[in-house]
Length: 171
Image (cartoon, one colour):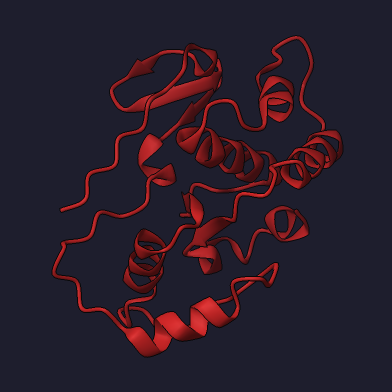
């Protein structure tokens, strides 16, 4: 099985009981930012890999199917075999607003490389001021634009769970 280890830098705060705190009042669950582990013998779906590869230059690709059809496994397996830097964010019912969403987007990028999105992380961690979603989003978009020439993908796994949260949809 592929093993993925995520290091948590001191700028995130203390890691206790599997919970990271970016702000004193905001616990983060590291498991939400880890790509799923797949067995080496996962069935390779070449036709679907070709379809995904043909859209690799697009800004957004949606993979939609009913529960249990293997969407997460497909994407994780495709990205495991590609040269695409992958940021993974598994949404769930705890993702209740735009700031929670932005915090996890930043955490998913920093789980791969702690040097990424530092200005956005600093805004989110600033305890002196309550973060303003519009300013944070603008900073995030500017920093994402500057990620460079490395092919990258941000996977929003189970995005449908948050589709009823208007603030996340707006982001």
